[in-house]
Length: 281
Image 1 (cartoon, one colour):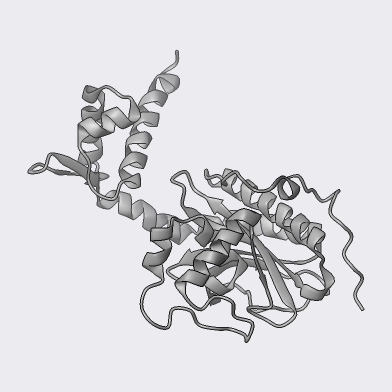
Image 2: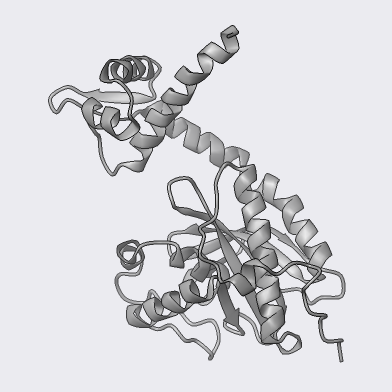
């Protein structure tokens, strides 16, 4: 075994320790880390000692617990600076536009809003509000509903507290309180993708699928927008399947994944089986 191969297990175990700490709500003990990862406790202590020296882990001696350190936070800030989602997602969105001849976008969740980080307009399609840097309320958008549906009920409730948290963008608003939001999220989960029809703009509809990271957190959503009167139910599902394929590709590129459970009719659709769009009139 060469020296590079011999270092691989230690590197993998180090990353597993960091990932485990990141998945916890608070600091944890070495014994708990050892049990969760199936690693010898002595190895865990050695890894924690190195991570502590490098600033990626902080030790709380009074409680005998370990948590993430400042250097780990610096990695998160560096991730945001480099904006890998937009860099990796842009060509994926462009290919999606080439396939569907519809507008496509990539959005992230920021509090109760979605924030567009990459968009692409198809030729001969109208300009829409979804542009890079634009924020919209998540409960009124397909991308927002797709990401919220991948979260727990408690997480959603924590976001939507207080008054004025369900602003309307059009007179077609369907979610005005948390009960209605959870009903819509239940429908989104059953359907396998987020959809909104003229909730943001007149004559515009969107389908979207989430990108899920290794911790089960929605990190983004891929959406396809189209003229609502041109698309029937079968083509909506076909577009959702293409959005899902794009989300899966993005997930693989950034080391994440996407949850299973999308209905067979959606997951099986491909560009070859996608119905022809109705001609413009």
